[in-house]
Length: 198
Image 1 (tube, rainbow, N blue to C red):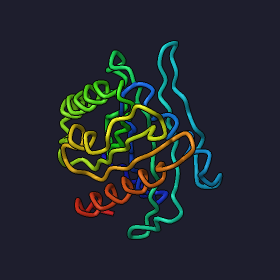
Image 2 (cartoon, rainbow, N blue to C red; image 1 turned 90 degrees about the vertical axis):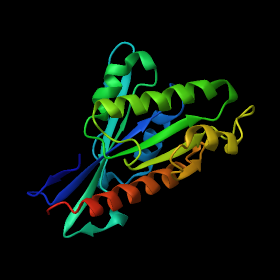
Image 3 (tube, helix red, strand yellow; image 1 turned 135 degrees about the vertical axis):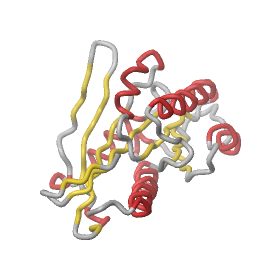
């Protein structure tokens, strides 16, 4: 749920990077953090245990402008990739305003992508969030590697809502900001249709 801070005149939007283990969620966040202006981003925080970690930082995109005099601040999160950390995944999804689902393009990870998107549906349902209306984009990462799944097949299998989808190679930044920009537009449009009282 979008948080509005009337004192600082900021609209806070929570976006979560979701996907199977080692698909590139953390790489996306690290690239965005590295390329964002210092005066527009908060500190990157890593919540880590011995076996898992969740990354988080917030940033204020300069180019988005204002809505009724309010600045828009995005809070970006990753979830642990492995399904056995499902309680942490559920916790991170609480109050989510948009999802970037990062799929691993490698053939060997195809089943992991399917399991992860099904896990996303289940976890959103537990929070009573409709996966069919929540702002969402897909990123098909690791397109630079050999033995990757055809884009048409990935679209058929993963993009059940026909949401915007982007090819990417997150480690060098290709497709990273295109994916994020698409989600920010969808989240802001969703915000405006809900006509929050500012």
